[in-house]
Amino acid sequence: MNTNASLWRDVLVLFGLTGWALALPSYGNEFVVSMALTCLMYVALSTSWGFFCGSSRYLSLATSAFFGLGAYTTAMNLDTMAWASAIALGAGIAAAVAVVMGLAVLHLRGTYFAVLTFGMAELIRHAISYYEKSVHGTVGRVLTTVPEMSTIYHTVLLLAVVTVALSIWLRRTRFGLALLGIGGDEQRAQTLGVNTRWVKVAGFALTAAVAGGVGAAMAVRWTYIDPHTAFNPFIGFQTVLIALIGGAMTLWGPLIAAIVFSILAETLRLQAPQIYMMTLGLLLILSVLYLPGGLASMRWQTFQDWYRDMRQWYKDTRYEWSGDKARDKQRAKERRIVGL
Image 1 (cartoon, rainbow, N blue to C red):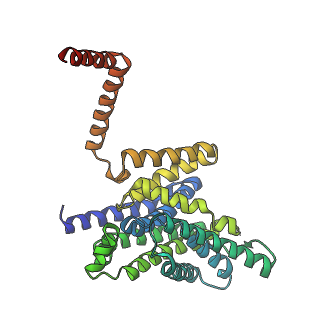
Image 2 (cartoon, one colour; image 1 turned 135 degrees about the vertical axis):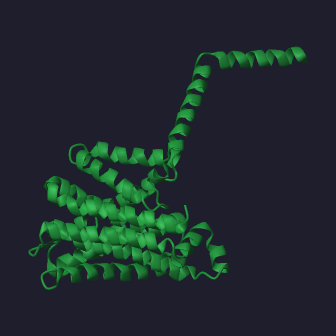
């Protein structure tokens, strides 16, 4: 499929999904809308994370920090600021922090980068906690001005649609190709004239801006905001899991995985949280071992390959457990002795 055809296909799919999401509140109950809201949140977070981290191969664990900064921005300013302005300010603050953080740590890769981003996220969380306790004498804030549920839903939907649309567009630009080049071979990308330092910082800031905007919009879902809720590391870890299982380097993989995980979260997490966490781990293990490209890479040929591998495994296991393998080895050994 050529570039123009794939572009129109992606745009039409996004248009169809957006129409379905817009119509959902008109026929869905409150539980369905709440589940869809969580799904849209993770669509935006995992799509933006996958665009930068999937392309550049930098494993960032700072999503919860950017999400929390956006949430606290809304909690602190919503009484005196318009809803759209609070969302934009949350995204801007998260992006500014990401620029500073990126300039400090984006020269590292692999485990070092992942550990440092997680450490900085925890540092921001503890700094906010210290500020709240020392300045305001409390550990959180009560949100007195909260928009209607429909406003929150349509805001998060807009953020998710804009994030996917940006991913569709940026993947076809020189910026997206530069990130792919950095992920493939950063030194070769530098020799080809790519300013890898600023490309990485810009991609990292874009991911942070999306997380900050989503956090600012989702903050009003809770009536009380504290650092443990806003900077919950589970949000960051689940974003990474969704992107990896869906296919971090693909466009639609994170969206598919976000839908699957949202359904699992609402059906299992409240009633059986241990089973939910075990399911997350199992899906990640199976994805890494048997589906490295994520759910988006699944084709009919994938199932055929799995079936062929299972049949071969069954034959080999039966051959060994029946004792035929040991007998054949013994006969081969006897033949060699006779031949000598």
